[in-house]
Length: 113
Length: 115
Image 1 (cartoon, rainbow over the protein chains, first blue to last red):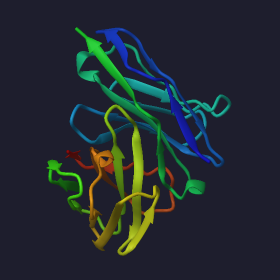
Image 2: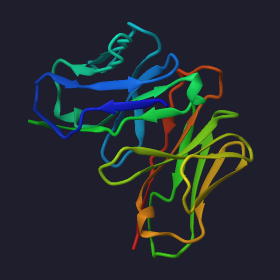
Image 3: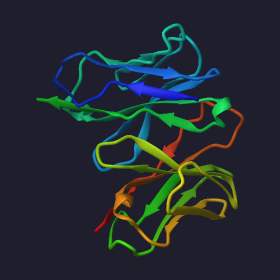
């Protein structure tokens, strides 16, 4: 079945540091890949997505590239801010999964001033 | 524009009491609807999803149930709460199409504490 594995947190960085959160997936079909972000006490919201191999999703300075050869979708940001402190979820969806979205366990990010 | 509402925002209930959480969506028709639970420090667990009125699929056997009495209303219920039912409950919707790239839109969540 489909699954998503992302690096365990928490990740603690200083402001302006480079961020990478690793995500790998297993899927029987050709999934779409997503990163969602959850700020404290709130629901999740879509950060970025990519729908086919080699696509790059980007938003608010965050980027992730759909790598089919390594089945990965790592999240990166060149310079994090305190306001980026949140929990980040990698996710996938495909037709063989009945269009349900499978979420990773989430990675908590703390950014210190 | 579309909005999704959940209530109540927080709830403290004794073990063995009933539960009813409500979710409504505005500004769209025929959405797919989902209930997730997020335990403290954990990821999202899909509990139920629905592709139409009266159509409910259960992902995890447990003492919870879901109903969809109207197109844009999704209710999560329990007859008798357990301590393990504590968590953050999230409702979400997505556009019902044949595409796998549709994002899910989440509500603000309900924090349930069972004592």
